[in-house]
Length: 315
Image (cartoon, rainbow, N blue to C red; front, side, top):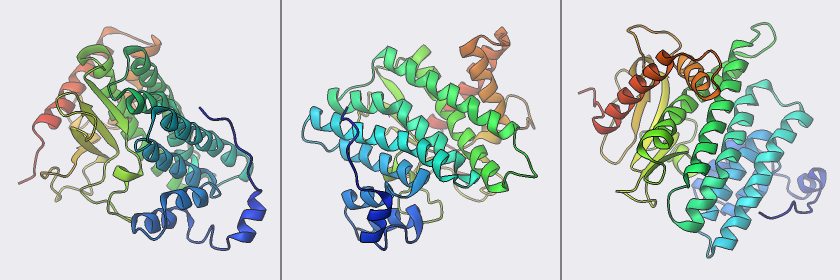
């Protein structure tokens, strides 16, 4: 991957680009999606917008890499994406960003962990090797367990409600990503089945500040469909409290997974995403492990796959 490139200072950039921070990274993405600016210009602007901006810049670079003319070019672009994700952490530490941005920091780390998968799938046009898939899965579980720790350490006196809410949402996504790739690595085979965190192209599809049925958090690829399009596009919600009247599936749209109650082990189980994360970490690390942990994960995975194959419509 490409080495770190020389760049002008943030102060000079802002002086020469007076609108560089106007509206924040979400507005830059909105303008890009409305074709009001090029992808390269959006990446340039986002790279000066702290943790969230660099997270989005890295995702746009991943998307750019899939359209590269050669494998070498694709790898070079992914090197730039790696730089953006690493700088997201530096920006968080140096700029003293609002604690509500902590979820974007963990998202950047998650994408960084999946870059070898994106690189392999782009260059080889096939599914990841078993070793690479298992490594990505283990990183998923470790990052998810860190997020769980952040939630459990939440201080209502000093930490914002938004920070906790954002982290809880991320934990739900990571728990489903972990369950899916656990099955891919240890059961189905990652050479025919694997899931990736969704980039801007999917995660913010046709939306600005609101969720629509075509957006997704996780994309699942299967060999019978190929790598050009996901077999399943998953939108992850921690509960169904706000979505009871909304269809969970429609042709050409996503499959909505409500972690609670869809993946609960027992009726009325609370904090399902937290329990899944604890189980995934226990099984992977061997810490506090007992056979019932694997049985529980297998049961939850079957429930998840039932939704993939027979998505309810609420009709």
